[in-house]
Every structure is written in structure tokens, then in C-alpha cells.
Image 1 (cartoon, rainbow, N blue to C red):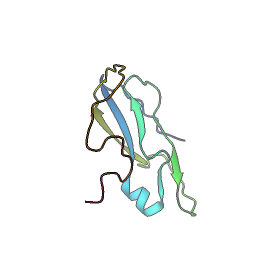
Image 2 (cartoon, rainbow, N blue to C red):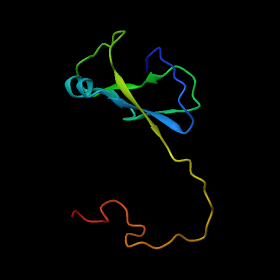
Image 3 (cartoon, helix red, strand yellow):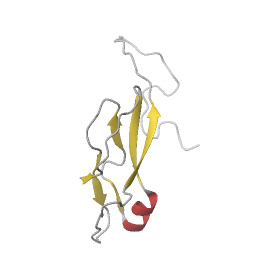
Image 4 (cartoon, rainbow, N blue to C red):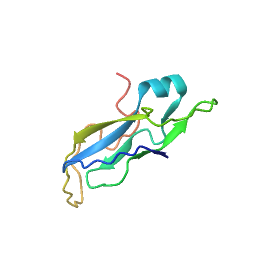
Length: 102
């Protein structure tokens, strides 16, 4: 876990998505361990980034290094309703690869 020293107050109904920096990931093999970190709008603590080194070469992270990037985006707040049956579609419950290659 890399401490950033940064805390944010995101607007309601937004989320901060923490992504890898392409240079660090491609050149040094270091990227967020969970691929995309999620900062909820009600979180008020320090943002920390779980970095994982995919290479065999040790990498040092120094203060001021740009280790990740955050995109702030709105999200839809869903309201759920329990039901007995869902509507039919052509795909139905087909999973991975069920729609074909083309």
C-alpha cells in the first residue's frame, strides 16, 4: 500500500476510479493490484494505492512519483425490486462467449 497523502471529498453520486499510469505499468511492470481502485463519495480518509510489481526487478517508489491516476465519474444509483421472473432476450442467460465472435 502506497500512501499518497491525498484525501478528497467527491460530489454525491460520483466515484473516483484509480487506474494505472501507462508509463509505470508498461515500462516498469508496476500497476494497481486490483486493476481499478474505487473511491466512494462518502470516503474521507487518505487515498492509498495497492501497487503490485509484475516484473522480477525491484522498483522503488519515491515521494512525488506519479503512481496512479484517478477519474471522477458519475454513477447511477439503482433501486432494486425483487421479482419472480426476468424478461426474455435472445441471449438469455448465456455467459462468456455466448454471443459468438462476430
